[in-house]
Image (cartoon, rainbow, N blue to C red):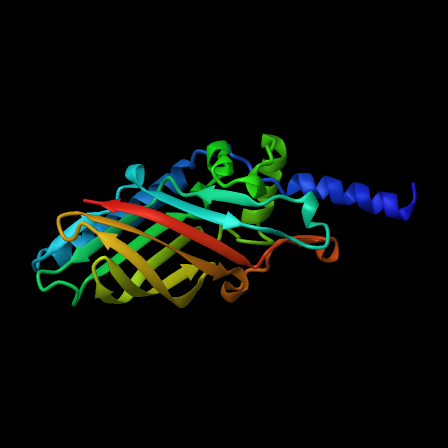
Length: 242
């Protein structure tokens, strides 16, 4: 086998590893306990805010959507795949004080190890760039790579937290300065929001882009960048709270 053919074989094998599993992995008891403790802390914090007046709304995962889009890169990107992740489990709260916008705040937390990868219906809704049908075995290998010690380190940094620092604007258009905690680091980002229903309920939607390297994460790359994942990751959300 020539060196060129050998390299091509390696690329094809790694490309299979760049697929992510759509199989949901049930959290271990330790993970579940950690989630329950984190959720209880957030709920208690917002209940205390509400005791001073105003309204506390709990975000409802079953009626909401959080999607994360990850894109292929590298000189042989055509051998890889784009991916869509979802967060069916999360904890989130919104506080809307009696005086309105002043003092309003929100927070949302989810776990990397509870993300679900490449649900077929999610991929199909995104058109040709996400049309490839991915095998569970190959997807699972890339899930391990993406969440493993050389990339997101989900066992060490399991939580992603988004909390508001400042909110401005007027319904239905708001701008929120948020702190995003990921991979043990915190960065601030200005986030546009479409919000309706205040203050008896809340329906919020929007999107933003994160750069992995801003949080100390090295985007997945093999064979000197022949196959890779783009640094920019897009997160889209549609959230309902009552």
